[in-house]
Image (tube, rainbow, N blue to C red; front, side, top):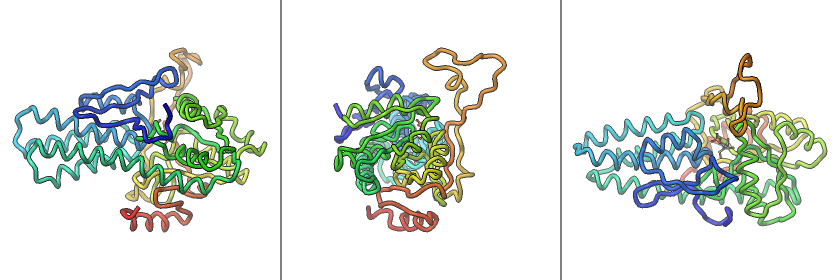
Amino acid sequence: MDFKSKIKTIEWVDTYSKMVDQTVIPYEYKFVNIKSGDEMFEAIRSMIVRGAPAIGIAGAHGVILYAQELEKENLTRDEFITKLIQKAEYMKTSRPTAVNLMWAVDKQVDVIKNSVSDIRGIIEELKQNGIKLENEDIEINKKIGDFGSEAVPKGAGILTHCNAGALATVGYGTALGVVRSAYAKDNTIRVFADETRPRQQGARITTFELATDGIPVTLITDGMCSYFMKKGLIDVVVVGADRIAANGDTANKIGTYTVAIAAKYHNIPFYIAAPLSTIDISIKTGDEIPIEERSHEEVTHINGKPICPLEGVNIINPGFDVTPHELIAGIITEKGILRPNYNQSIKEAFINKDNI
Ligand code: MRU
């Protein structure tokens, strides 16, 4: 097994969605089949599937699952469409920050609204569109990888935070797509992966992916990044994104902002790697990005065991932070590397969006 070929970590199969269960990595690598819309809502909420582009595809699959359920209710075509759009809107509330979820569900809603077919035909069109979105995701990530590899110096130490790899997408990855493409050109590069407390996506998932592909990776805890920057071991930072505002402000996993500040201090370029579907041009700045507040137990416990007194201690657990655009050297997309001024470069990328 490897993650550099075109394997799909989430895909539509006949009547259900098949995805890697990310909650058990690295102890186990197994697929689960999601067979109902409500099961998909729960899979997204509980992070069986996680990572902005992957949960987008999961949301698109969720709409197909709801459509299959509504087909059994003997509704008129109009009733079916009204109820399905309500279900799609509900699916969008399964997680708040990653805009790819809303983007992909809206792509399915467009299919529903534009269809002239009967109920069976609409379901077929939703399936075709879901599979198209899957395939496009891998193609886009390869382009992100190829553009981004140009920003990686020879023999570089690359720091990444959280997991923006094959497992956060349909395949290949965004930030790890850059790593994969860079490594294919220069096998002397090496990666530093932040642990990424509290859910440890860096430790559990990024190191698993890179070790599986034979790419040299060193696991560090989140607080160690400036130490290794000062030592000269980090030449470039590449992370993914969950939502990017029109001015380039970027929400990514909690702790990313700290890494960006440290990179600026040490004069190390800090890049975001993300598809255009992660850019939310409807919001002007990062202040408008909703930040998910997650369960306190993610902070108070590790592997089910408490790591602090459970009485008399306040807990707060935002899942994401927003890195201000002025700390970002470039946003690596399928259209190339966007540079400051981001208001301008993002607008231009959207004008030419369809000629990838
Ligand atoms: O909470 P998660 O694990 O779904 O967080 C999303 C992420 O994986 C990261 O923030 C990632 O860097 C961006 S998604 C490619």
